[in-house]
Length: 337
Image (cartoon, rainbow, N blue to C red; front, side):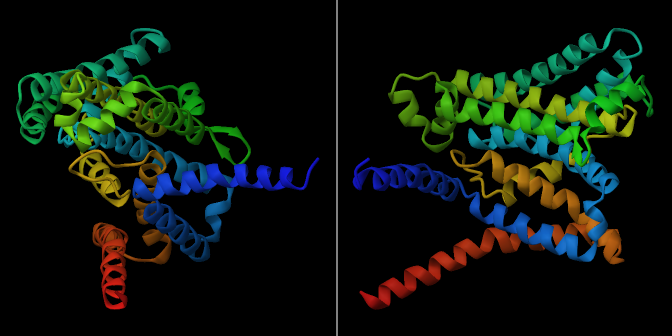
C-alpha cells in the first residue's frame, strides 16, 4: 500500500463526519444535543439513581410518548404549519386503542388506532393544503372535534390494556434497555430515512423552505403537505399507544398535556417555524430534556409547578445563545474588516 493510501482513507473517513456535523448545524440540532448532554450530566449528579434499571425504564416510558408526538409536530412545522389538534389526536387514538383491545385482537386494535391517526391528519391536511385555510385555524377547530369524539368513545379512564401489552411496549428488552426506547428508535430511524433518502422527504423540506420554487419545479406541493399531515397523524397514534400501554389505561384527556410540550420540544430542537428546517435527533433529545425536567425537580426537592418556568428558561437559553453568539461573531468580523 502506498503512503497516500492511508491518507485517502483518513480523508474519506473525515468527510462523512464533517458532512454529518454540517448537516446537524444546518438543521439547528447542535444546541439541543448539547443541552441534553449537559442536562443529563446534571441529572445524574443530582440523582445517581437514574442509572438503575427501574428508573431508566420509568424515565424512558415518560419521555417516549412525548418524543413521538414531537416528531409528529416536527413534520407539520417542516411544511410551514403548526398542529394545535395534536393533543386531541393523541387522546382519540389513545382511547380507540384501549377500547378496541376489549373487542378485537391486538394487531387489529393497533391498525385501528393508526388508521384513526391517519384519518385525523388527512382531515387537517385536506383543509390546509387543498382548502387553502391557515393550519393554526384548521387544527384549532379540529382539536374540539377530535377531543369531543375521544370523550364520546371513552368518557373516563379505562380500556383493555393487559400486562402483556405493557411488557411489550414499556418493559425491558434486555437488562438496562427499556423496550420503549427501541420502539422510539425504530420510528425515528424510519422517519429519518424517509426525510433524508426519499423524494417525499426532500419535497417536505422544500415546501417549507420555498413553496413557490417547489411549484415552479413542477412538484405537487399540496399533495406533499397532505402526506405530511397524514404521516404526522400516524406517528402521533404510535405515541398515543405507547402512552396507553405505559399507563395501562386509556384516557380521553391523556393528550392534553402534549400539545404545548410537543411545540416546546420542536422549538428547543431549533426547528424553524417558518418551515424547511428541523432535525429528528434534535427533536428526540429536546423531548427527552423536557420530559426529564419534572423528574429532576422532584429529586431536587423543588415544587413541580416550576417545571414550566424551567422549561421556558431552557428554551430561551438554547434558542437565544446561538443568536447572541452569531451577533457577537458578526460584530467582531465587522471590526476586523
